[in-house]
Length: 130
Image 1 (spheres, helix red, strand yellow):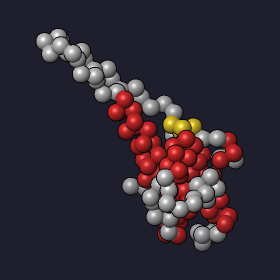
Image 2 (cartoon, rainbow, N blue to C red):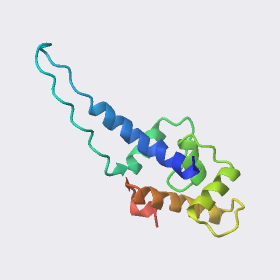
Image 3 (cartoon, helix red, strand yellow):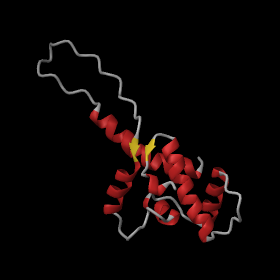
Image 4 (cartoon, one colour):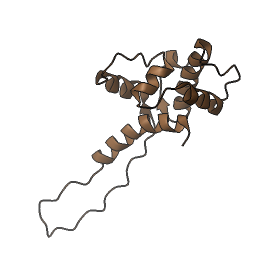
């Protein structure tokens, strides 16, 4: 699986798991009553990325600045933030600069990840994508 795929699954999966739990049919009081056909789960149209990451950050064991740091974002999502993984992510997302872990590369990566999350159904504040 791609590094971006892992990031997306780590964020969007939390929303999907919550939606699946909420969509479980309630038990009926009368066992002889006909069982209703469960409704199809509501598709996840927009995932509030900021709310999910903020909530997850509240439980982090260290202070993580996921809003500006790609390394901290990856740590928060329990994805290895090694230079090798960031290089792979940069290549996936089309980075054309030097793959050396520079501040320029890391800033570009963070914004590109946020833009891709937004393009894939995530609700991301504009200040995180600009």
